[in-house]
Every structure is written in C-alpha cells, then in structure tokens.
Length: 249
Image (tube, rainbow, N blue to C red; front, side, top):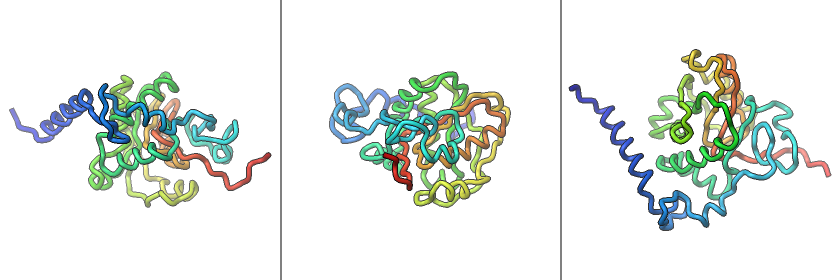
C-alpha cells in the first residue's frame, strides 16, 4: 500500500475534530470551565450581540428603522436574502478576529452558530459555497476561514459543500475601503472553474463577516452568470450600516 502523508494528515485532522467535538471543558469566549460540553457558557451566550432586532430584509444588517437599508436601495447586495448570526461588535467580533488570526478550532463553535441560523432562515438549499482565497493567502494564514465554516455547516446541516470558484488573483486589504472601492478592488478576482456544479442550483454563500456587502455581491454575480438559480448568503457577523445621511424624524 502506497504511503500518503496527505491522507495521514487528513485522518489525524478528522480524528482531532471528532475528539474535540466530544471533549470540551472551557468556554470559547471567556475561558471559564464548563461541565456540559458546551462551547459557549450560559453567561457569555446571554451577552453576545445576536442579530435579532431590526434588520434590512435584503442584506440582513442591523438597522435603526424598518425597511430596506440605504445601501441596498442604491445597489442591492446581489442575493435573494442574506443573514448573520451576530452584529460585528464586542465578543462576537473578537471571536471572528481570533478565528482569522489562527484559532482554527473556533470554526466549530462559529459553524454551529451558523447552523442554528441557517436551519431557521433558509430552505431548499442545494449546495454551500465558501468565499475562496488565493493559494498564497491560504498558505500565509494556514486555512480559509470561510471554508472551515462552510464545512462545519455542511456537516451539521447535511448540505453538500462545493468549491466551483477560485480567487484568481490577490486583492488589496479591504479593512479601510468603502463599498465602491471594495467593488473595484474585487472586480474580476473570482473565476468559476466548474459551471456544471453551479447550474440550476440554489446556493448559500458563506463568509465570516459582511461589512458592506461588496464581496458577497461580486461573488454572487459570478455564480449567477454561471447559471445558479437562486443565491443566498450567511455570515457569522455583519457590520451595521452607517448612513452618511441624517435619519428623518
């Protein structure tokens, strides 16, 4: 039998995932000891900023008033419906930052939170697709955080995870860019390599955070042109829209 390091590493990771699923002793938020195997203790869960208030019906970001947000009025996010588990603030934002900075094990916790959201909000999903990263970006970080989330969600939800799209070239960091600059930065960066996997399917796009919606919008546009039937999006957190215009009284 031919020895395969890749298969061995894959098997060890799978064993590690199964072990970690059944052996948890501390809260992933505060680090306190837990006794029921829960990932988040009761006190931290009660304090997390779940996105359950007034939201835009399209992008799903928190709003101060009922109705479609100003950003989506100007340019819709590109999917039929987007939703997020948390608002991007406090311990929820810190969890995402820790996850992206190397604490890959948090993908289980955040993926389970995504599962609870998606099981409630979405029906008839044929496949899950993670926002891809370039190979060089994955090597630098060690993993694609959206892919880790998608795999955990797919495992819990029983929906297949597919990877029909690649990120063809690197883009500038988007942390300090507005939506228009983000759109220009992302233009042409995604490429569909397997149109058959996309055609005629209802697809859920998964990412860690929705900031302006530019990434989801560009990615959805690529999937739509490849023949996807309906598109949705789910993220762990989303950033509340901050309109430059004063609210009407």
